[in-house]
Length: 304
Image (cartoon, helix red, strand yellow):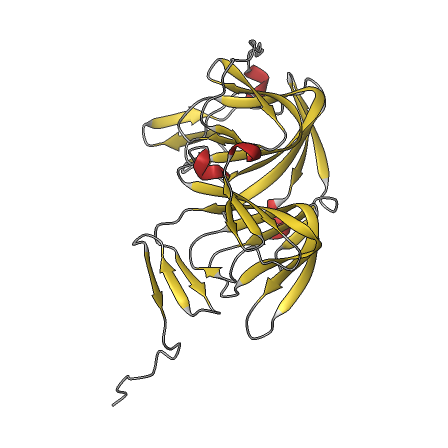
């Protein structure tokens, strides 16, 4: 179906050298396709990964609670609850570290698959320029200790807090484009607050874009539209994945206490979005919206 809850997902503890943290893979149990989201819980002083750079995957972190630091190319910056941090691909080396009150974050990004071939019997692998030997162990074991500097007085534009982004208000819905405000290029993140009974947006379905939703506060329902409409209860900690091309429109409706949802998605230029209630289609790459008069593709066709 594409829904899970972070309390139902198995956690694992990762400790290796200077790195430590508690991880939860939320995307796969929710049915995500090429992209994912992980929850990383850090005790005071813990750092989950070495400073690293991704080739294709743009990462967006969202701080659920606590505070800490993020490392970006030899500099440190303070991060806190409600922060959205964009780590661009082929950009700065980055990681995070928890302060005295711990740190709890969501990490959204693509699943990278290296285009290489491996020869397991000879323990080697090749790339476009040659080959290299496959070694035992883990690359993190070779990492030199990372010494954290004092935080910079000003944060870079790739870190924004929910309170710093002006919401777009429509009816009982307040939507903040966190990813866009922080300079995301290939993916996006929106923080959506809904009053009781309000939809997060019009029901829709994507042809190419993948979406992942995490409920931050309140409760409500996930509504699926189609030949057999379905509803599923959601609450704080619910994770919903909507892979591309399902053909099933979706939306969230806030319950009595209201609903706050974090919506992450890819920005696919070839995506087509269908809105069944208004019969509109949005061609994202062209920036064109049109209304469809019929869904019968046989209508008007000569068969003889």
